[in-house]
Length: 185
Length: 237
Image 1 (tube, helix red, strand yellow):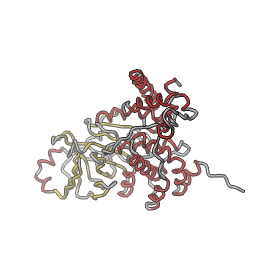
Image 2: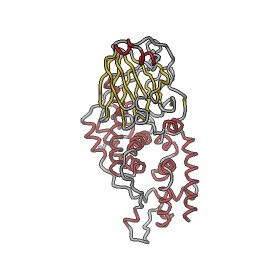
Image 3: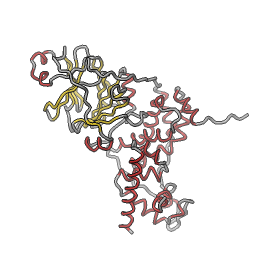
Image 4: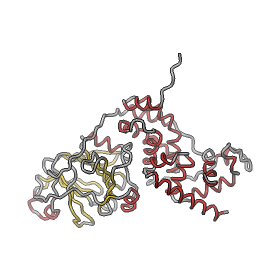
């Protein structure tokens, strides 16, 4: 008989009791999003790696204070975001976000994913550039909501903001993004 | 979702992120070298009985106080002086300053606040004198943890702490930077600004860990041992 893989709650419970292997499994499940979250904040791959790794270690030690039954993902990402923000004080080079299609497909061939089919490659590049040009707070809230696909509630946890603030900040950031796009259109 | 939101959402799969490193393996290695301790924080007793604020001028001008000087410890943004005995003091209530939102606190102090991982949102955030921000965890009358922070590069010497002869002061390292762990029940803080005494207040009755993190001076107060305080400090990010 094949035993079912442990659920996230079971892994969390085991990790709370000091099972490093269980935490390793949780880390593997969340490492991509953790790294991307750190990258969207630091815009530097090396710093993002350091931040995400340090955050996961901190999360393990903080796990006994994690509220049972609460969603793990936003709690972990909040620690990652904190750690990544701290790294911004260093003088590391900040990279601009780029679109995958620009590297993987010949010019003019958008090769879109199902979601990406909504936009032509040039439009997406323009949108990304406009997003990149926003102030850090605006960019971060929009990145959480739309690039990392976090819910409003998760974004609030990750950014340590009340949910209402996430809502209003998102709305204002969308307004400013719209203005940037109109100016460049 | 508006059209703009749909367009943004369509970017989610199109970003060219750097390849995700094998963080789980690195974390495994890090955990293997440092087992976790069990840490339970007790509420801090508000220290009116022993928290004694001194007229700072007494310490500065009293020959008795000067002659009773034992040791001086320096961090960026703080000094801790150990005296044979504390001068005569006046009892005042603890004051962390005005209670404000996190955004307002960050606006006033001019830097992003650090918080211990996994504690969630603090129960209250206070700012004192526009320079010292304090995150309070637990009920106001009996908090379990108070984490204060200030920009020590701007306000070097802003926080001065005096300790009695019975107080233990240990030099420690937190995240590779210098720190001091102050324990015992006979210590209090005095706040200065630009070389001028602003005020002095009692604090809460926990032990205190002071440490530098880049330009910041952090002050963690909780009813914890040195090792427990260091573990908490490692979680601050």
